[in-house]
Image 1 (cartoon, one colour):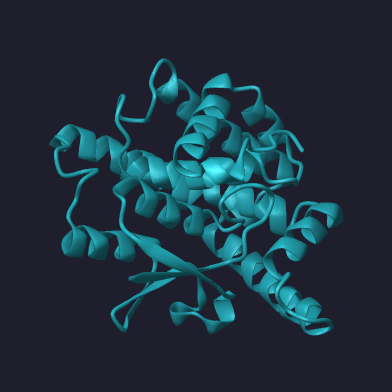
Image 2: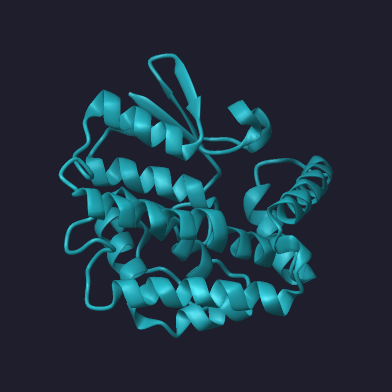
Length: 241
């Protein structure tokens, strides 16, 4: 059986790690059996979560993991997509994972002392003190460097959140009148998009882009629908906290 290594659960959502949510949602969408092992990035291949172990083989990076799972266990979600649908899925995935994700990371790791404390407690809850504070400080500096390397961390907060608002508006428009991004059936891009959005809408940190996202009924309903279908044991997400 596959072992999925990820952060401990928090906030009444599948995981405080966006890509951990993505991968576990994909596993549930496809019905692939797995078990969870809670850990932290410092113990992970490539220094990030999630990663999996399958019959002794360890693999990190959610993109590479999903490709591996498709090859080893079949592609029940994306196998029948057209070339146009695959192109649309890739574009939405890039928007979510390579741009909106970083807006969310800025909100949690750099925007305000209260947000940082909430995020630190969820991510590093498994470590004893004072180790938790020391490791958290190191990772916060690392994330700050990644934000600057991406480029978004060099902008004023107001401009960062305006860029995030435009991402959110695009996703809301795409989901208007649809169950999932590509229609009435889920695909792997929905696992990715849900992972980013649920950590924006139901993560208890504040930001202007979160406030805007909460006003988009299509996004709230989308996250509620996916969590109800694939994570019923978690109950209703706590939007707006």
